[in-house]
Image (cartoon, rainbow, N blue to C red):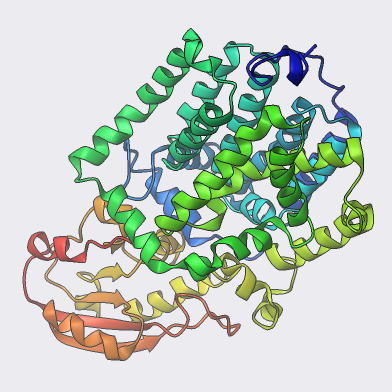
Length: 512
């Protein structure tokens, strides 16, 4: 039993392990299974996302690091394509599994806080209908595995607070070792959790040998990637700056509001309530470190212009805190309806309509989905894009065609031509965008270069820096009027290259 506050100088430090409630396995696994089946059912609709096309090629250029990410996602992509070939369903299947696993981990987090069946289901349901979690679960992306890993780290930390089993500190280190090879962002979460524990306790983790072992494991796992970064001039730092400058999600003014959108307008009240109760409820005082960690990360990412989903690893724990309080004491007056099954059903339907490819592709441009989930627009039109570039290539005179090279403006375009180009008779495409720049420069053929981009004809004047004869020959279109990055972009045929690629290629290097 935990000593009452009047009998212990620090109730948090003096906490003694107690029995956790039984896990509501059947309904929790049902929720997780429904989400996983849904994600798999729609995984082949529309097409590849540009990041997936990039990972597919990066998997054939394995390295300990890339300018925009650690090495794990390209490695998984290589393994999947080696076993299953170019199957979009197979490539996205791990993401469906990761999202489903996140539902289970969310429920287990509620259980570790003392939540019974209702609290576990409420937490699991909040994760299962979370727009960000569902959207991430549809695509093979760093965000999907990062969300599961971060949520798992928080769950293991909460479990350690309840049990004081120091083996869990080693487990945190093991998951962190995995997460650091997906995104270096997890280091911020780890620092925030440590700071939260130091502020409110329990602080005895500092005296546990397994903490040092877990930290060593995480550091050793990160060393190869950090060495790669150091040898290449720390491009990840420049990449972080480029992301901040882009001001996605309305930049700093949108940082807090978009957390409500990404977690679901209705379910967002639950994590806000959970955050508040970590500071107000004696029953949750042990877990107050979660509130500290969340607030600290908000300050950090507001200062550094981070994205609102960088806090996603803490959402499940805050949902759990709110759910546990509702189970024990009831919902606050006037808020009980928000925790009802009909509200979650409506949220689930809305999430599907805003995040998953459920519309006929010709309707997509007329729905609100592209405005809410811009990634949806980036999964449409890649085969048509490749065919349009191939038409430009075939229009070249035969003597020029045999010596022609192709340079495109981003890794998605290069990845699309890698995927669909061989079937159209195209040579390899090159790009200076992010990691693709490291995959090789064009050969010195002496022939013309087909260039995709810049974004409009007016900007094409900059191409004269590299070629003496620059002519726009086509305008790209996805055929369904969808406003994505390739829609309306010009294609050029450039002749009279002013210098060898060995000299020009460094100028094509670009991070974004």
